[in-house]
Image 1: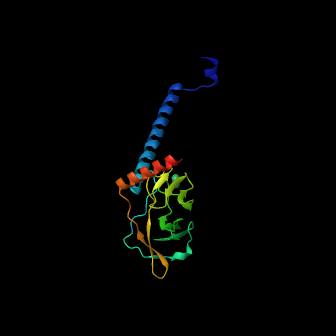
Image 2: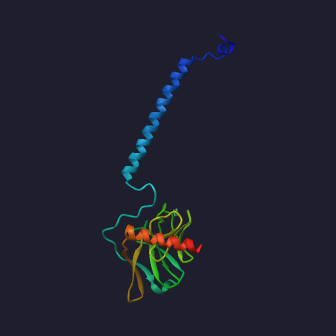
Image 3: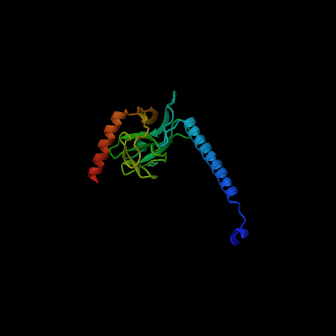
Amino acid sequence: MTWWRRAFPLDLAEESDFSRREFARFLALVSAGFTTGIGFLWWRRKPLEGASDPEPSPTTHPVALGLVSDLLPGQSRLFKYRDAQDACILLRTSKGELKAYRQTCTHLGCAVRFRNERLECPCHEGIFETDQGFPIQGPPTRPLSAIAIEARPDGSLWAVGERPKPTLETFGRQAHCRRESSEEKA
Ligand code: FES
């Protein structure tokens, strides 16, 4: 027997048994973790990529947004629509149009803000146009969820519902065109 075997009396057969056993345990743990993860995703039933919009609410009550004259062109204001978690943004474009959207970016859910005539997401530089909320730059591929607003004869402004989502076909075509035109300008 060599000197180092006497100094380190390891049983190689036992050692490889141990390693195989450990490896099998490791594999079992990884499989269990994987299965649990898939089960959790299935249970949530949410897409892996993208922030999902809230479920449509069967009843939405009008929410007062102040006076139409309160908001000047280029300004925006935050409000809550359905509940305290439903953060939305009301804005007035430089042309004087009033628009309202959910603040939730459709990429990974950061809050968008109104700057330079567009809605910008600070997380990954996603940009949405203000007319219909279509994404025109960055990772988002779906439009923002739009809130319908109504100006009443007394000058008050109300959030009165959710604007219908564009169809996939319309969305694809318009988003494509807008992306193209914004790339051409660049
Ligand atoms: S979360 Fe808005 S661009 Fe990524």
